[in-house]
Length: 137
Image (cartoon, rainbow, N blue to C red; front, side, top):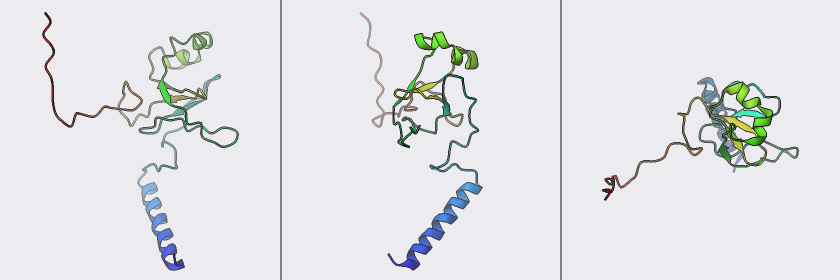
């Protein structure tokens, strides 16, 4: 690639980044656009990014954890019952996700609707079929 074309591409990229940043839109390399959540004494707490399903916490070697985020019912967790930090901070029924490897806690992003699934809202069938319930005999 010649130097002239490369410099034009770099200038175009910088202009796009500047326009997105000035509009207040978060970029993939930036955070969630939210302030950092209050940290708990025995847990690391972060906000989930929109549609995030894997942990983005980095270890000592600067490698991503990559563990799946799963809905965490902390009131049923025996170890958390002994600690009690989460229930004291957020109550008994907060929506909290936890990494299966590093145990980092993730709060849902306020921009997303609350859901019962880490993957988000399910899709509507492309076939459009709705079957009536079976008759009970």
